[in-house]
Image (cartoon, rainbow, N blue to C red; front, side, top):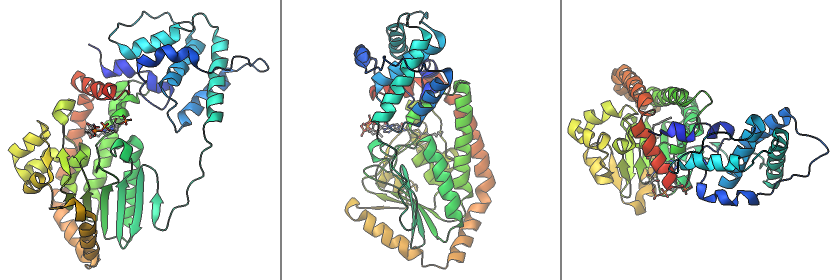
Length: 398
Ligand SMILES: CCCCC/C=C/C(=O)SCCNC(=O)CCNC(=O)[C@H](O)C(C)(C)COP(=O)(O)OP(=O)(O)OC[C@H]1O[C@@H](n2cnc3c(N)ncnc32)[C@H](O)[C@@H]1OP(=O)(O)O
């Protein structure tokens, strides 16, 4: 049985873009612009390592053909001609890699090394120079995939990857933790999470799973479990009221975490979906505890085990959402209300929050640890790996 780890292990070790592109593009490989004429200086092993490092810094995905070519040249440069058995027809990704590497025939290692270095150098030169860091606007602490602003005693953390439905990358988990740490100490009364664009958040970025370290998928599962545990712990321990302004559909961890929020305001366009069953996963974000507590075990099971998607109204009826607003007036009504809440005496707000949270905190930490342990196993399962491969290959990411 092919696992996702077998499919993708090794690819992401060599470049930061993770999964490999569609094998359908392999025939075009020969058309890549290679700079074969460099004779003045031979590329050294150090040049090769520098070039590999350079690739990791590329912000823009160079495309499938280039990634395959880089893979093939790297293998040829470090291991020589391909002498692996040809993968089966159904093993699309490994077959594409094998084809690319085999196409280099008996190209000497030194030439492959030189071609790799030249290809990276030409692509790096052709790409735009990195833009200087944009000075932060007043109150803005971070840009990019996560935007953090502080205004009128409200710190707002915005998922800002609308083209990817605000899926959360590994870097975003880290940045959210940093933003929460900063918000816990700033002068804000409320901390808000929201999304930019059509979606609130589509959950964990499933391409996270393609970034397998050299130690293998077990190590990836272990570090993911640590990351998830620390991430959820930040929400459990956050000392101020947390508000979710759910502007659109929410999936996966962006839903489960809502059980740790104090207020959840939703647009009537929002939906709430935890497709753990179809993904071969199990619940996280303490939802295995908070959801049954808030909506009863049977409704929680329907969501968390069987992946039933709730409308905003249904989620409100189950206690997951505080209030639903028409999408046309959502932003105006919600922000007006939140601004009014910031006028309340801040110490009273904080004390009330603490006495409400303190009783369950230990329990939440224990639940979080248990959920992360279960997920560490799930991520290595055939059920999960096949589901992720299905998602990624349907979107041409493998
Ligand atoms: C280490 C911590 C682990 C934490 C554990 C967390 C678990 C979870 O969160 S489980 C839930 C994971 N999320 C999903 O399963 C959702 C996957 N996405 C979808 O099902 C769909 O994309 C959709 C329903 C959210 C939207 O569908 P549609 O309107 O058809 O739009 P597209 O599928 O074309 O999406 C546009 C664009 O965005 C990319 N994308 C969307 N969601 C994700 C995602 N979760 N991970 C990675 N990429 C995502 C999608 O691939 C498209 O990209 P391009 O093809 O490059 O345009």
